[in-house]
Structures are given as C-alpha cells and as structure tokens.
Length: 109
Ligand code: FES
Image (cartoon, rainbow, N blue to C red; front, side):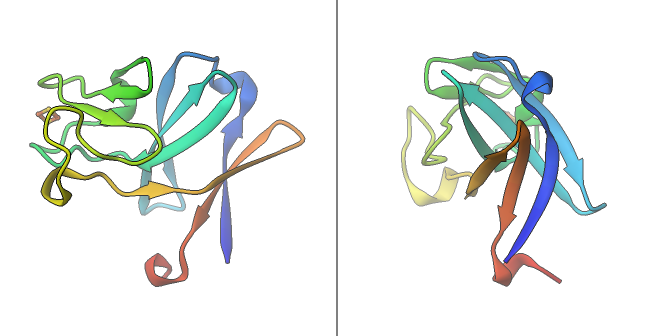
C-alpha cells in the first residue's frame, strides 16, 4: 500500500477544500468536513474542472466551472447519482496532523 503525504491539517480548515498534486501524477481534491478528511480525484467528469478549487457545501464539493456537486465520501453526483458521473474517491489518514492519501495498488505504477 502506498500513502502519499498531502499536506497538514493547517492547510485544510473545516468547511473547505483544496487541490493537491502529488508525486507528479496524482491530482486530488481534499475536503475537510467537520474535521474528517476526504479525498476525491481532482478532475471533474463533466469537462475536467479542478474540483478542489471549488467550494464545499454540506457534504458536497461544488465544481468551480459549472457547479456540479459531488458527495465527498461516495463521489456520486448529487443530481444524477449514476456510475457515469462518479468521481473516484480515496481513503485518507491523518497521522500527527499530516494528511495522507492511500493509493490503491491498481493505480500505482
Ligand atoms: S467541469 Fe465540472 S461541472 Fe463542468
């Protein structure tokens, strides 16, 4: 299992989301929902908008380009929750205030 350091809790206040690029090939949207950290693929399935540069509204990240909303835990689109518009999600860990994203073996290369 591969864990990538994605920042610290100081980088991600509750109620906010950010974009991070890791290892030169992984782009994530990180969201802090009431102190719990979620990670989604940063690329919006609509037209490629950077989800982490959007805003967090309740349990959804809002894409900054056209406003589509994705659930931070499941990755499903709020108004059309089918697989076609689902954003991949990733397990996260927080160790001593360091945020880590767990990369599945299938995506390591
Ligand atoms: S690119 Fe995200 S809503 Fe259009």
